[in-house]
Length: 81
Image 1 (tube, rainbow, N blue to C red):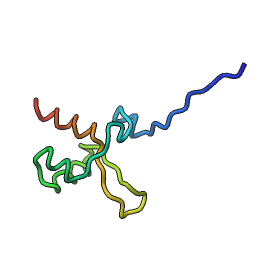
Image 2 (cartoon, one colour):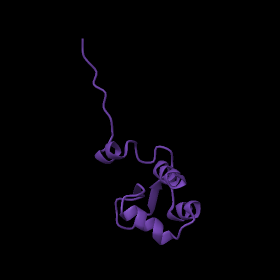
Image 3 (cartoon, helix red, strand yellow):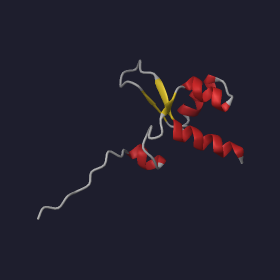
Image 4 (cartoon, rainbow, N blue to C red):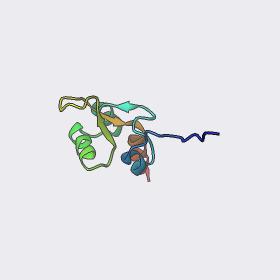
């Protein structure tokens, strides 16, 4: 009888953050800035510093930045306390 092995596409970043990137959707820099009521440059700084999880729509340098909705919401909730 053959055994089955479950495989997962979980990356090291997924393990570090505790969830898969984009699992609850993606947001643009403008959407996040509007939600958090901060300047877009502040959102870029959050991305650079790893405060909010981000990715790109393309492997190439010209891809559009997208932010993980779950990490944005988690960050917003942390500000409420």
